[in-house]
Image (cartoon, helix red, strand yellow):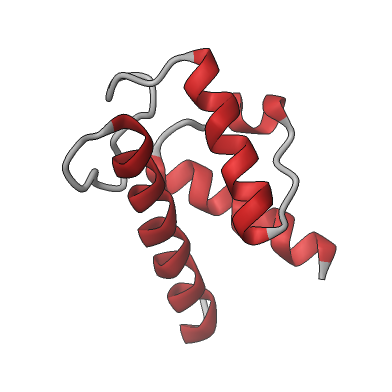
Length: 86
Protein backbone atom coordinates (compact mmCIF):
# COMPACT_ATOMS: atom_id res chain seq x y z
CA UNK A 1 0.00 0.00 0.00
CA UNK A 2 1.45 3.35 -0.97
CA UNK A 3 1.95 6.19 1.48
CA UNK A 4 -0.49 8.30 -0.55
CA UNK A 5 -3.18 5.61 -0.22
CA UNK A 6 -2.50 5.27 3.51
CA UNK A 7 -2.71 9.04 3.97
CA UNK A 8 -5.93 9.21 1.96
CA UNK A 9 -7.39 6.37 4.02
CA UNK A 10 -6.48 8.05 7.29
CA UNK A 11 -7.92 11.36 6.09
CA UNK A 12 -11.15 9.63 5.06
CA UNK A 13 -11.39 7.90 8.44
CA UNK A 14 -10.87 11.23 10.20
CA UNK A 15 -13.59 12.77 8.04
CA UNK A 16 -16.09 9.96 8.66
CA UNK A 17 -15.32 9.95 12.41
CA UNK A 18 -15.94 13.71 12.51
CA UNK A 19 -19.26 13.25 10.69
CA UNK A 20 -20.36 10.53 13.11
CA UNK A 21 -19.41 12.74 16.07
CA UNK A 22 -21.23 15.73 14.62
CA UNK A 23 -24.42 13.94 13.60
CA UNK A 24 -24.69 11.64 16.58
CA UNK A 25 -23.32 14.02 19.20
CA UNK A 26 -20.74 11.52 20.45
CA UNK A 27 -17.06 11.90 21.31
CA UNK A 28 -14.58 11.05 18.56
CA UNK A 29 -15.37 7.51 17.41
CA UNK A 30 -12.66 5.03 16.51
CA UNK A 31 -12.25 3.11 13.24
CA UNK A 32 -14.28 0.12 14.42
CA UNK A 33 -17.17 2.12 15.86
CA UNK A 34 -20.45 1.42 14.09
CA UNK A 35 -22.88 4.16 13.10
CA UNK A 36 -25.92 2.33 14.46
CA UNK A 37 -24.29 1.16 17.69
CA UNK A 38 -23.39 4.81 18.36
CA UNK A 39 -27.08 5.72 18.10
CA UNK A 40 -27.59 6.31 14.40
CA UNK A 41 -30.97 5.65 12.80
CA UNK A 42 -32.11 5.22 9.23
CA UNK A 43 -33.05 8.92 9.19
CA UNK A 44 -29.68 10.07 10.48
CA UNK A 45 -28.07 7.74 7.92
CA UNK A 46 -29.85 9.69 5.18
CA UNK A 47 -28.53 12.92 6.73
CA UNK A 48 -25.03 11.45 6.69
CA UNK A 49 -25.31 10.43 3.04
CA UNK A 50 -26.60 13.89 2.11
CA UNK A 51 -23.76 15.59 4.00
CA UNK A 52 -21.16 13.46 2.25
CA UNK A 53 -22.60 14.38 -1.13
CA UNK A 54 -22.82 18.06 -0.20
CA UNK A 55 -19.35 18.32 1.36
CA UNK A 56 -17.37 15.86 -0.75
CA UNK A 57 -19.37 15.65 -3.95
CA UNK A 58 -19.46 11.87 -3.65
CA UNK A 59 -22.74 10.09 -4.22
CA UNK A 60 -22.93 7.26 -1.72
CA UNK A 61 -25.60 4.73 -2.64
CA UNK A 62 -27.67 3.68 0.36
CA UNK A 63 -26.85 0.01 -0.25
CA UNK A 64 -23.12 0.79 -0.10
CA UNK A 65 -23.59 2.61 3.20
CA UNK A 66 -25.41 -0.37 4.73
CA UNK A 67 -22.69 -2.79 3.59
CA UNK A 68 -20.21 -1.23 5.98
CA UNK A 69 -21.33 1.09 8.73
CA UNK A 70 -18.17 1.39 10.79
CA UNK A 71 -15.90 4.41 10.45
CA UNK A 72 -13.19 2.38 8.68
CA UNK A 73 -15.59 0.56 6.35
CA UNK A 74 -17.39 3.72 5.32
CA UNK A 75 -14.08 5.55 4.80
CA UNK A 76 -12.87 2.72 2.53
CA UNK A 77 -16.13 2.89 0.57
CA UNK A 78 -15.76 6.66 0.13
CA UNK A 79 -12.17 6.21 -1.06
CA UNK A 80 -13.31 3.62 -3.63
CA UNK A 81 -16.13 5.82 -4.88
CA UNK A 82 -13.82 8.84 -5.11
CA UNK A 83 -11.26 6.86 -7.11
CA UNK A 84 -13.94 5.50 -9.43
CA UNK A 85 -15.25 8.98 -10.19
CA UNK A 86 -11.79 10.50 -10.72
